[in-house]
Image (cartoon, rainbow, N blue to C red):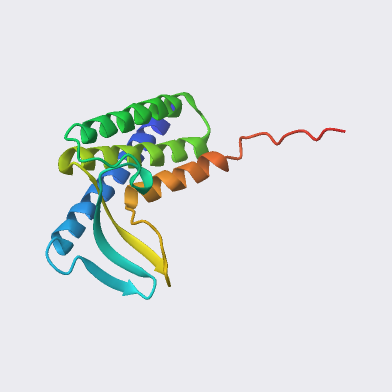
Amino acid sequence: MRLMRHHAAAIGIAVVVALDLTTKRVIEGVLSSAPHSIPVTPFFNLTLRYNRGISFSLFASDNPYMPFILASVSLLVATAFTIWLLRTDNGYAKLGLSLIVGGAVGNALDRLDDGAVTDFLYFYAGAYRWPAFNLADIAIACGLVFLLAEPGRRPREKRS
């Protein structure tokens, strides 16, 4: 039974990576020539952006080694989360960790391929703009929600 859960986690990771990389390549194909943005709703565009840093473009750099450094850090974190995934029996934790690992691997592979992470989901409201993101980022955020909300956590005892 435990082996089946590991296979399910591996399949989940592979699905996240495949969907992430496929959507990035499709968007690049569609938006690499003008226009670089397609309005979808009054608050959402498909917009091609490249992030040379990490979240919110932190540590963005044109240094030729930076993509390898950031991808290596992502893969090290993914390895640590994979070890955690292999050691847990909690289904919510497994799902969350699978989503996080799949997202981290997808972004790392994209960074190694392009030198940057391809972002294309762009939301805004009036003058407020949210940084563009991708499916890997969604997987990572959802994975964190599953980890934080896992029902296996015991509530803190009330102090009298």
